[in-house]
View 1 (cartoon, helix red, strand yellow):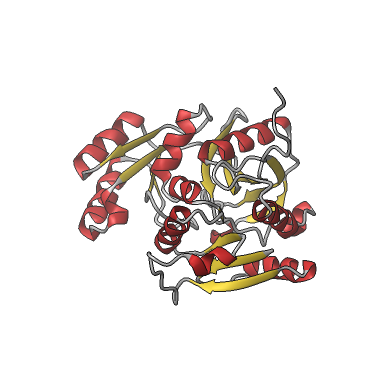
View 2: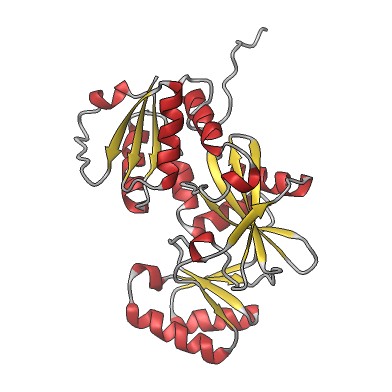
Length: 299
């Protein structure tokens, strides 16, 4: 078994995964995407890897690398399709809606004028998000028309890709918390609740975590969301409304889990490496993320 680990920065999560690989005596190479050069006509040196573990924090570099590996038939976790869907909130919403997964209402507009119209139709408050982004950055809860006009004007002047597509999401009045579940293959391995006095509950923004027992609804929605985006190893963000009904907010394909191991008591790196090995050994199809049948059908 030989594993390639694609990365840009070594975080706590990567160190935990390396520790688990070392514990098992598995050979792995660190592939720094910042130094990486692909010759598109030469794939032979990459075929020594049974599987590529993608842990790159740069979405654009990760997607380019996964697209190349995908074209060469080299198994990756997560694969290109999962990254493409999860890395863009528009793609995620479309996949969830297509597969009947409960998710907040979303409107998409392309000018400040049409965005303001969409916001007014949806009704205040709304949440304005960049289509591509993470860690709760560049989010805005818009409570009235005056705030909407000011924020839309700022985004128009900034003018970058992140500000040129207006992704407008229904505001779910969650009770000071949300839930992050972790799905590996077809199993919801654990979940945490993230609490904060601020409406943004990401741990990157100061949210505090505690264990969230996996009930039937959490498990079902988590696995449905994971399947909708293509499976693999993902973290699913869920929100409760005032009635306690759960909605899938986002799905993360290069998940962070450092703050979830202790409260849940689940060895997340061990579960991740179990899955990586299964892909590398050919027990799981890297395209469908489904177990391969070990026996031929008898007719």
